Length: 275
Image 1 (cartoon, one colour):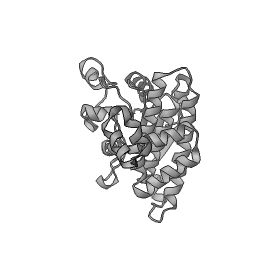
Image 2 (cartoon, rainbow, N blue to C red):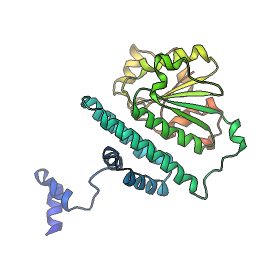
Image 3 (cartoon, helix red, strand yellow):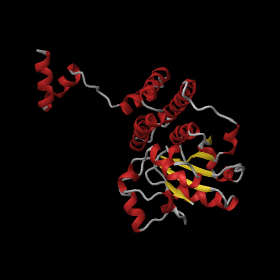
């Protein structure tokens, strides 16, 4: 009888709930499962979920396939309802805590790369949160993947990109400044930050991770809008579909020429580099 009800639920739209209740298929996608835990502030279950995923795959795949999509869900919810921002802060803070727990978990593995004195000679990437706490969480994810590739990476919250704080930002020893945005149209914000930082540190390379570009962003960019005067196409000239959904793997692959990385050291999210 149960099998009959499950089959009926799959083929009769009005009775679809029977397949959900009685079937064995997961009700939620992995990113939805993680988002549900982040939204509830359930750090313990979120960490267990993330560590199990990393054990089967890798931290880069966790952030590509689950972490960034979960934060994207939070941003899309924020855009639909801007009345309450407390949940966004809770999601971001829990996500950052999960990233740090995953980092410790990865370091405990026998195959984890040991940090040595040679690390001080590696390029340094400063990962900045563009506007919100969710951008901060994405920057933490990116920084962890960079560190696993023996790159130096520092993360700073969105407060540092305010007008007054930008003038005080310490860029000593920084090779690349990388901004993260979940805003669907971040070019105005990125232009503001990069122009001011370039005046202070013309030697520093710039990149922006666009995790949630709107569908018409690429078309609008080519028709009327421009990024800051740069050579971003020199590093990465993605197809429109790649602009819509960022991945950590695409990011470092595109950043590699600026960091002079070997092909074996690739791994990072989609972005447009601003030189």
